Length: 537
Image (cartoon, rainbow, N blue to C red; front, side, top):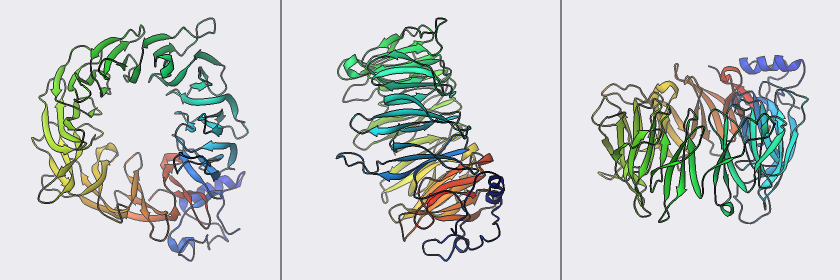
């Protein structure tokens, strides 16, 4: 077999070194064949085979150590399902080398069928997925133990969620919510007729919603059992509840409860009593600031009219009005400012870009016909798209410096997708797109920008991009002309150098391994499988 295969045992460490250095063992110089090329090396392919065979739905654990994927996938023969839906055999494999393990069958690729725990210690998945009931058999597996077997946790599970610290698990089995410690419990029943559940950010409280036929009630229960070993009796916060959200410090919970005229009233409850008080009516959007100091919400809305934006203490006390007819809102990461779309036009799906500094700054409207916006990591800049009608129609990227400028500056005309690089080093975006947005220029405007600074052109002809956490490297994909696959490249931000890693890949592509030193991806066609490639300059 003329492939570079990661093996188990004593060879694993040696092959990982090869992966990190890009070296090849004797007898491997020829490489694997590629569509339209003579061999991998001629095309620049540096990938090493991690798991052989056609694979789909690649995912990577939060720590980058493990990858999961589906094989032998099949499309269910049921009318009305999404065309992308598949069922298949689930495998996991360490990205630094090891034997791929088949751990389940009948696993779906739809959201909610497979999760890594936030601490990357466990993988949770449903087998034997039943489309009619949208349920399956829930299993957990300890990833770091190569000989561990999956633990069967529930037989007709429709929903499951791990706690933020990765220690607890809640799942709905046959309509009954159960709660316990990973990986194997014991799992105690919490309540029946449950639809969904969520943990507080500190993992100490569980909130859950009952089904509509059970009044759509929202309840809460402490995660830790009583001295008797049983769980405390859940407390009801409200009925006919819509969305709900915890503050980052887990002290407050804001939730919607259906009011009059087909609108929702907003309530805030405080731990540990969790007794809700109404703070707004006709609310469609609300959020806590990242530092848990502020609560923003629109108030006074009607079915035909959006409410005005109010911001005040997280406890729900009376705040001040900062915007009219607000649809979208988001705090800056440093909690010092609030961005929003005011006088929102539902038909045009756009509004006026507003920014207000906290606690008592004057609101500023800095842009019009804005469909969306995003904050930079340090909260000093907000970027947004604006639709310009003259002299020709154009969707342009604008940048506003909070507290530093009266007006926003135009960063680029004709933009398709944008964001901020990690550490707020640059505003990045795609523009100059061809092939229906599949081939774009990738540009960056260094922050803070000089008055007349123009964006730098980093890459050409890319489809997607993914930054490393340190912001120093980019995994970029380019759509091929001869197949529905992508070439994968590594771009070094400092040296502005681009290196082809591989051809014929599926999306997505991930950084993984120690210090994000590897790229992980799936190849189609000749030499199909899951691959890793060195992702350092």
